[in-house]
Length: 112
Image 1 (spheres, helix red, strand yellow):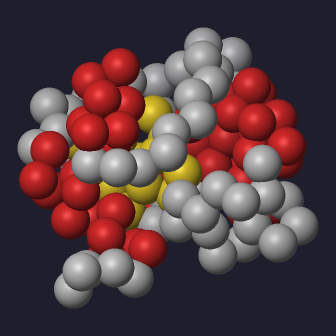
Image 2: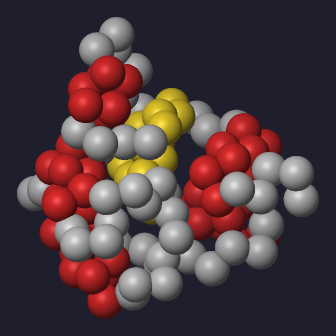
C-alpha cells in the first residue's frame, strides 16, 4: 500500500494508514472526517472482507465509499468483495490514473 499512499498524497489527498483490518476499523472510528476507504483484501488477522463488513456495521458509515484494491483477481473475488459491502474493486497493479478517477467518482469530484 506504500505506492498507493504516495500516489494519493502526490494528488493532494490526506492519507491515514493501518497495517491490518482491526487497526483500520479503530482508525476509522477515531476519524469521523474520513470520506473514503481504500481496503486491501489480503491482510493478516481481520481480512479486507471482514473489515469491509465491519465498516458497513459502524454507525453512520453505511454509505462510506470503500474501494477494494487487491492482487486477488479470481472470477468470484469481485462479487465476494461487493457482497461484503465494497463500493468498487480495483486489481493490482493499480493504474494511478484509474485509481484517482475512481476516487474522484466516489467523492463526487469527477468533474473537478
